[in-house]
Image 1 (cartoon, rainbow, N blue to C red):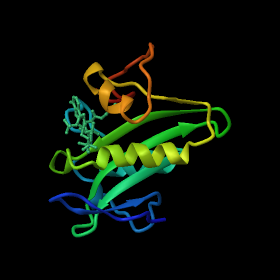
Image 2: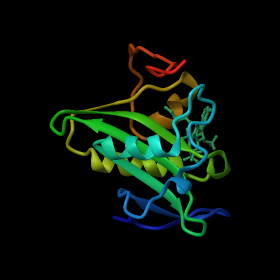
Image 3: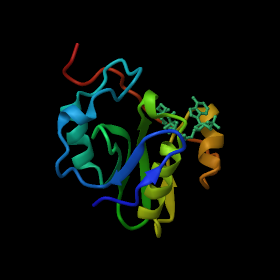
Image 4: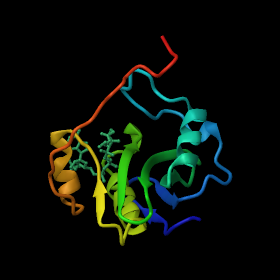
Length: 147
Ligand SMILES: CC(C)(COP(=O)(O)OP(=O)(O)OC[C@H]1O[C@@H](n2cnc3c(N)ncnc32)[C@H](O)[C@@H]1OP(=O)(O)O)[C@@H](O)C(=O)NCCC(=O)NCCS
């Protein structure tokens, strides 16, 4: 389903979409910037398909996916937002904020919406209604079965 279209300042015309219909791997190149083991576009599509909720920001002109957000939810009480990324070329045009805002609309009614972020990004999330919290996590940078 394609959402309202936003024209962004000097930037691109962006469609917001929560379906993988018509999305191919070529449109998903370039994500997981800075990751030691970035997911391939095929793995990325699989990850999106397995997430309870996701949204894509799509450049209307090129068809390229400019950004995405995912959420994992029990559908009753809580959700976790593991991934939000906007490609460097499209950053600072309001796409990240819009993806979070639209995901929060999808998660309306849940009592807990949690995410982890580095301290410098806290103000970004606070502007969107999140509060600082203490968290604990396990990170395994090397994928299982890969050297
Ligand atoms: C964070 C991210 C999704 C923001 O996307 P975006 O489309 O550029 O966001 P918006 O244009 O809506 O808002 C830009 C705001 O993001 C915040 N921001 C982005 N990167 C930041 C960083 N590294 N440190 C601090 N603030 C940052 C700033 O508040 C910025 O506002 P400014 O332009 O006034 O400085 C994007 O920078 C990104 O993909 N970063 C790499 C992946 C990442 O860190 N994801 C978040 C995981 S919790």
